[in-house]
Length: 90
Image (cartoon, rainbow, N blue to C red; front, side, top):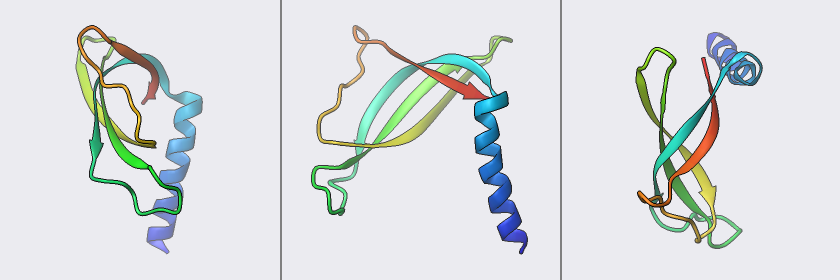
């Protein structure tokens, strides 16, 4: 029962982030493909690790990463190709 309550709280925390989280823009610092092709019914699907960084209003720099599932084609990030994305955080 305790585990079920914790899982529900985790789900509500992620949903509430969209409503009460602070908005900012992060700079994508790297994209890399992790492992090989996923063993799914849809061919050419891969897992990508997207690394990003953003700065808090107080000047503290925060680094993070997320996973993304996509096809075999992706754009690598370089110094001449800076990509930014909107984020939300608590």
